[in-house]
Length: 262
Ligand code: DGL
Image 1 (tube, rainbow, N blue to C red):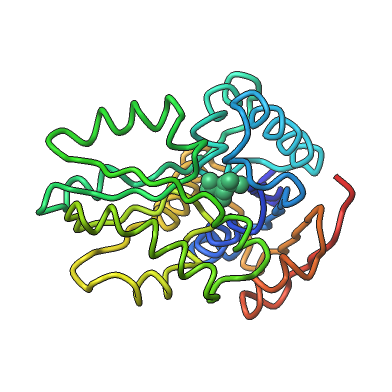
Image 2 (tube, protein in one colour):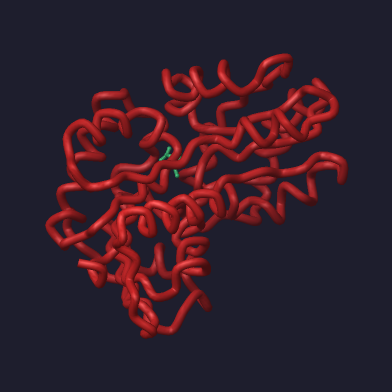
């Protein structure tokens, strides 16, 4: 059982930012990553469409014998994880925008959140915001267009820069001191965001917390891989393998990336 892989999926390449955190913390775990890039962006789809895609991704990963599923996508988590937990016995780890730490740390009591439309419109996002952001003003910003640009590898381009300048302006004008990245694609924009934001604005993302939670659940369930061997890391994508590979350069030795009709 314990040598079975962890299954990780995202609407595309963004979840590799989560895979990297998991790999750092749990290098002995075998992993299978599924990038559903053909259907990205999930953030523009309905809740039902997102759920159906999540079911398809989960079935695929369970078919490969995964012992736990990491939903490495805020949009998928906030729209579908409750249903997934009802439908399957396997443990699910999700990712949600880190509103709680941002709210606790904020001095200006104004926090910005950049996320997809699907995440910002979800019930789960609103209940988390209601529970953890008392006395905090949240400036929500949809990052429309950013996921397709990142999928295309257009990370440090003028087009991406202009879009970010536009999206950051209302948050900066409102006086945020924390910017929460509510999409697993966005950590790839951190170098550009740091260039565009004044130093007093702290960027927060949840990748490390997801890795810690994954470890915690594996330990609790007694399903950690006890081997001393480094894991085997398999990546599947339903678009060009090179699109995904460029996000994994220098990540680890044993990475295998393949295209799959899915
Ligand atoms: N990485 C996904 C997320 O965290 C991107 C969603 C999308 O495909 O729109 O929300």
